Amino acid sequence: MSAGGWQPTPQHLQEICDMLVISRNPLDPRYGDASAAVEHQMNNPEFVMHLAFILARLGPESLGDDVRQLAGLVLKKSVAANFRTFPPEIQAYVRGDMLVALGDVNSQEVRRTAGIAITTIASRTELSQWPELMPHLLGMLDAQNQPTVEGCFMALRHICEDSGEKLVDDAIGRPIDQLVPRLINFLECDVPSFKQSSIECLNFVLMNVTAGRHDMPHVILVHMDAYMGRLSALATDPNAAVRGAVCRAIVLLLEARYQCIEPNIAAVSEFMLLATCDADASVSIAACEFWPIFCECEALAPGSPMGQTITDIMPRLIPALMAGMVYNTEAIENFSVENAENEAEADRIEDIRPIFHKNRAA
Image (cartoon, rainbow, N blue to C red; front, side, top):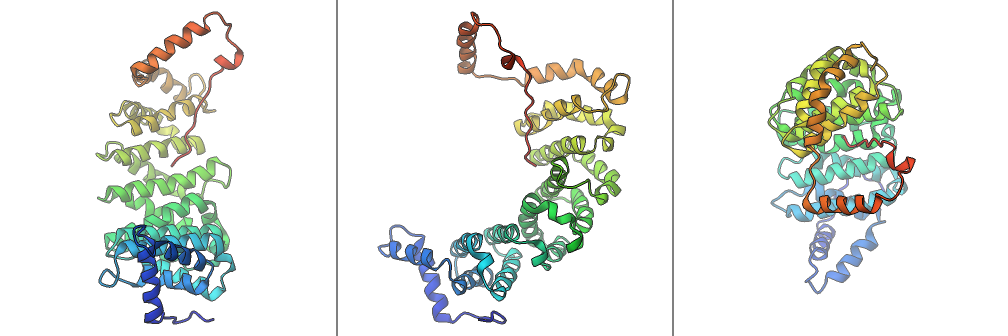
């Protein structure tokens, strides 16, 4: 079966649309049969092509977004289990339609669902088997309309999370080299979600460095001054999600390459202290991760700039951390009970050994 120029027959397309509509309504007496039919067809490549067509090609004048989204979710489930078994021409058709759906200007839900399907496909195969993907996404980042850029980030963020180590692969042209400058430029845009997504994409790259999957990409080092400058400008961003992403970026930079932060460690520490006291709990928690990593840094020697910085800030840091240790009445009562029960027992070494918790979320 060739998928080139494929078009569904109107009758078969309508039958599948009707099946999807019924399968999402448990009150419909035909619900059981429709759901079973959808499940039965999941391995059928032609059925999957219809699902791709419905998600990508049927606009709001033809079908509701909820049904198009359902088609995409069924498609995602099918490709997760069967994509490698589909003939190459079927794979190519599905990939093409997912890129069309990702740029849908009418529906955020359609774009989000397409992003999920794209990242599922990318995680099940090698990026080298989809050479059009990264150039297409890079082109979407350069678009002048917000829905297209938003759709791009919906896929790109998950690709950086799930397949980020592949972006440094020479076999696919090292897309990281073109991606990083674009992401840094987005830190100056006016859309909070774009700033947050850009930082999170870069954070996933840094997480691969800290996990030892690859070295620090040279392109990040080349643009480090611009990156640090724009992170600094976002330190007081009114959006809490952006401030939290900035904190996580600084933590990852400190862990992956402390030399990038060392020249400005005093200013960075002042910001992280301020963020530790942030009224938004998510920002405060993200900032708190900075301090144990800072204290374990190999450059933290007496008399060094980093050593002097932590010495100077400690009198303000300890009260800030203590102020953040808030417990409700029930927790305090439980502490009292536990203390009374433990008074007669000597402490074991495992009870008093310090534990450092590290959050690996971007």
